[in-house]
Length: 250
Image (cartoon, rainbow, N blue to C red; front, side):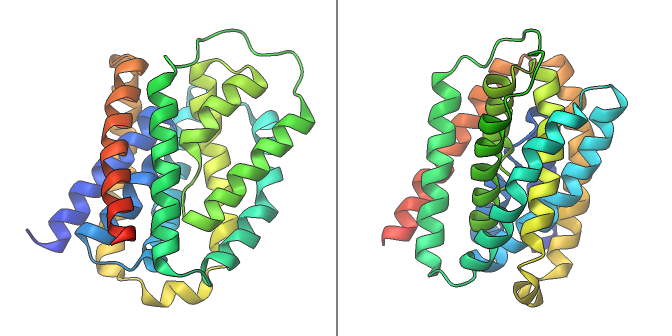
């Protein structure tokens, strides 16, 4: 199968995940870029940030049109992660590739187990006030993950927004896309040198397919229960994490 077709298929899956779940795109994009398309881990994390930034902004627009984005709280949450994302992005360029692969696999496995153990946060009314300290701490941690591993952090941002800020599920999904976009852009500013090694003939089609997939993902989320989507995604994520960890240790 040609690299172009693989990029289009993988991009569509990444977009579906982002549009339907408000996250998870980057934890699929990085292994796809490495194992299907031959990117190095460093180039894959940078390319994933480009793909996820463009796709998240598109999905953010779609969710904003339906009123699912809480701009004030989301901006506070995202702002706390900007500096950690930039610093971690600079550190990532200096780490050995097996370390990046193993760290990514560990984070993916943790996210998958968390999604399987929780039945999904229950929808409910949002809290009247935002707890700034907890929101800032959680946002900073997500920002660091974004910079280090090239993940937008949406698969962690959604449950964090529900538990820390008491968002209902639809608002958490929409607002997480604001967080992902901001963190990814901050991390990209420190990765200028690594963009030189990116194959744009693959990254471009991958991004385009992901953007289109994000619109389909939003429509899918309205038709399929969130629990089913989360379980299917978590099982796929566990398989990816196991494969990447085995690869890093051999």
